[in-house]
Image (cartoon, rainbow, N blue to C red; front, top):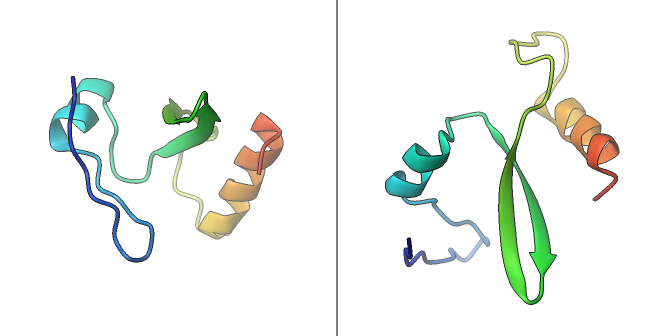
Length: 72
């Protein structure tokens, strides 16, 4: 499946709905981004616990993900 996406001035892009549906990507999900042979590869990752955390900000979970995957 090929889809054309445009990068915004802030470096943002929107994953097409057809791709989100096929990979079951929902609002609030995390994707691990890597570069492989000149390509950007996005992989959906599960970060546990997957519950609403009223005590920690989103950045806390991002830091947890970096430690879990050993990447920044």
